[in-house]
Image (cartoon, rainbow, N blue to C red; front, side, top):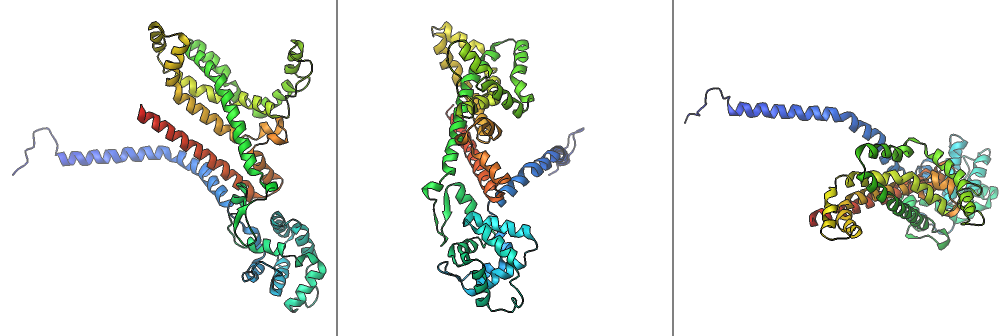
Length: 419
């Protein structure tokens, strides 16, 4: 049966091939345009994120510095004194360290597990080599010299720290971030009550972030609604004023709040001048100062999503509800507010996620009991030089952020399905 081809119309199969080639060219062109952005995100976000997660479980200090000692402790039951071969391996490993910096890194890592290990390791490292003929000495003789040098080597706690951290990968940092730890036998257990700090810090971080989000919503909602009811020219002008904090450094804004909230600052002077207070209020270095400054800094992040949603709500809805006999306030809450739920959710999520990662504002305006989790990330990074613990706390913040986003997405999907 012959295929009927009308004059002026090409072969349908050839036309399909041409359309397929055009579609492939379009997709390749779109991919080429987005490739620089994908590479940028890979280099600036995904790679550092992967490095953070890897460093949170990496434990190379002991494994690299004491390989012979770790091997000698494999059969040790982690009770009582270790075998004499472990003493000999320890002396050989410490003597083989390239320089003092490597010994310091090892000492700091062990000191976080067994207090006093830093001075023990460094004193032993300085005293090595043990003397002439040390390489030919028996393990028992090396053990005797090490114990004579520092009797603390007879205590099993230091050897347990070495054996527990002999693997290059460890869950200890992540466990410590949630107030758990591994015992000397390797079992997971809770920290002692006086050492359970990060749970309280995480709860404090969420409390401060929730309070900041609530006040930002209470202040930002009426302002966003007012802006959405103004003519476009006035709304754009006032929106520029709302966005001014974006163009100012956080340090400058925090310094301004220090000037405003101090005992002789403008706020206290205004309160005393109007007779509301008889003496200056404590507005600095406490929770109140932290909340005030964070709300001011994060308020634009609440206003922008609310404003964009409110602009899409037709003003005729409210007028129609009032014309049908509903009081204006009740009509506003029953007609307008439900239509702004997406903006409320987006703004609250954005402010909360930004707040849980804040560091500068609580560090400068808060007291010791007002520091959030990010403060301790910086502490372990810059002061303790414990990158593993810092990355573990960072991973904890990342996990909390992803969980919040997941909950938000589920709520939005359920609302859309019900709608």
